[in-house]
Amino acid sequence: MNTDNSQYRLISIKNLTPETFLIRIERNNFQFEPGQYVILRDPETRVGREYSIYSGKNDPYIEFLVREVKDGSFSRFLKNLRPGSLLELEGPKGFFILDEIARTQSKLIFISTGTGISPFHSLVKSYPEMNYKLLHGVHFADETYGIDDFVREKVTVCTSRVPDGDYFGRVTYLLKETEIDLKAIYMLCGNSAMVDEVMDLLESAGVAPENIRSEVFF
Image (cartoon, rainbow, N blue to C red; front, side, top):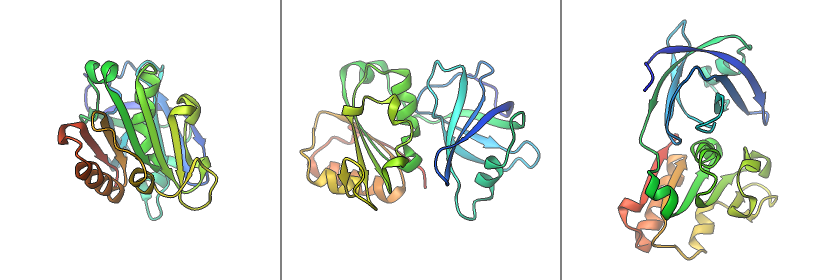
């Protein structure tokens, strides 16, 4: 377990879309379970925000997928950092993780919107042998971040603005048209409206509450 409030040096920032970028920081033997999050802080002001870990458990660095939020001063602060800058990292935190039995013996359905793909990216990079499917809701297909790290046939990109993905419409629309597997484990991560609606759909279909896990981003 890591000591809270440790400082880590920024390696790089990679812009993925005009609003979204990938932060890579040094690993420094930081240990975590895929699916967990940390609080990134400005070491000068101690202002911070929670971010799910995007990188895999065995990667030699730690990565975070960040969306620049309108009127979001902290995301702008992160985007303007330069390599070599220091960030304070508090964590790891959270229980949005899978035990060995779930990883090796269960069918897993990952449902995400936007940067909510982060914990699933970490899980798949760490345990690529999992039996999973990913439903990812975005505005445009180029917002399916890190898709090359998933088995493409296991991913359904749901686009809501233009029909340039695998399915034109929200992930909730797709679920309403799909037979729900009552034995699968469902993991939901993204905006609260999506998470609430999907939970209602799954519970109404008869999925056991213990087989529905969620992480709300906003």
